[in-house]
Amino acid sequence: MHITYRTTKTQYILDYLIEHCIIAVAFFLPLSLTVSTVFLGGGALLWAGKMALARRLALKPTPLDGPIALLVVLSAASVLVSPDRSFSFYNYYHLMGRYIIIYYIIINNVHSLTQLKRIVWAVLASAAVVTAYGFYQYVCGIDISAFEWVDGEQFPDLKVRVFSTLQNPNLLAGFLVMIMALAAGLALRGAPSFPRRLAFAIFIGLLGGCLVLTYSRGAWLSVLAVIGAYGVLHNRRIFWLLLLIPAAVLPAHDAVLERLLSIINPTDTSSTLRIALWESTVAMIMDRPLLGIGWGAYWLVYPEYDFFVQNAGTKIFHAHNLYLQIAAEIGIPGFLAFLTVMAGHARLAVRLIDNTGDRWASALMLGVVAALVGLAVSGLTDHILFNIQLSMLFWLLNAMVVVVWHNAYLRA
Image (tube, rainbow, N blue to C red; front, side):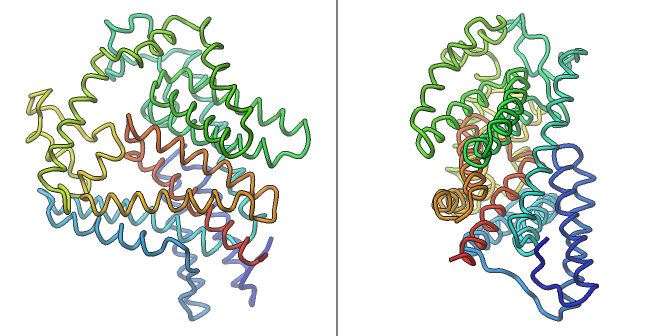
């Protein structure tokens, strides 16, 4: 294990504990928000103790510190215009605090690719647990009627949608798409032997099977975008999968085919509601373009823009669109700052694919880019970053890019 500041035994122990707190966060992230939060908080305290012991605020610069700082400031400013400032402030410092901590604790305490590999393996291991539990739900059956996730008249054959540990099928689907994309990069570029590639192929296939069982149409489209990204960035022959995968699902269960066909002809209540929410959210943005309606205040403001449900007792927590949601809550300038952060990390990862000097790091960057592409496309039809765990995963992936960038810079 490579340690940057191993001047005393105490600092060595702190480095060791911080690294393993990060690994624990990565593993428990999709399994338990409470447990991952405990390890994140513990890691942050140990990191603060490490800097106090060294008597210096040792923070590594990153290429995107400026846009991140702007995002933090504009998000904080949006709290001032919220209809419930206390709620927005509480929500803001709890969530933004987590995201900034997980980002910078990784960047400043993960110094080598060996350490980074352990974190990636923790992420993949937790995905295996999540997937296994998803299959368990499908085999044992789970009553989803109370959740109103399915239009029963439109999809009479759809009785089960798995959600595993992530409370909602669309959230599970978004998680699986990102992990499949990450694993595919490691398989295509980072696995030197056939047995390892076969193991990755089986792993990705199992995740894909669980993804099908979520019946999340937006996530299915995201998979096609991920395949397209690999076709552009790795090998054009991968584009053939865009034809093979749809052909492979033709003999699938009727419920799968019905969901696929509904993408072309969206007449179910879920699709109708989404379109109505987008109209309402656009109206919010037009009314408050500068600072938005307030961080986390969508559910508070929506009744004023309820053009569809028209029920004061109905709570709508997000717009089912990543981009509209962020623009509505923190304003257009804040939205542009977020886009800069997201696109900036993706662009940096693309540059690193062929410039890391390390095969595994190159594979990881390929996977991260594909994962971000999947997230970007899923954001058109849903807002999975509304979920704290998936937002933390987003910032964790971004931090991985910067760690690889620092290592590539040192090699150069």
